[in-house]
Length: 95
Image (cartoon, rainbow, N blue to C red; front, side, top):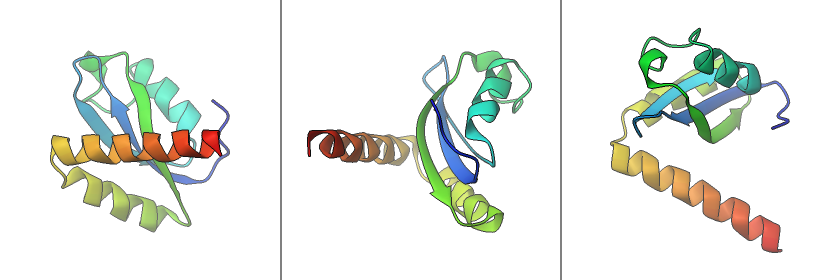
């Protein structure tokens, strides 16, 4: 991965297939922290975790607001968000 620092909202897929949503300014290190057991209590017993989705935002407040919005979604809606992002990435690769 090589993602610059900024303000990010992200979704992790946990080892039990559950999803965890958070925000950070350093996405690479945050994923590492989760996998080292230094992240959220939720992910601690569900390691390893994998980054499956992220968005970059202009400020911390926007990233936190988006985190809250995503946390209000059902798992099915979060899965649709993840799939939609993958489709966008794949279509960019073919153009």
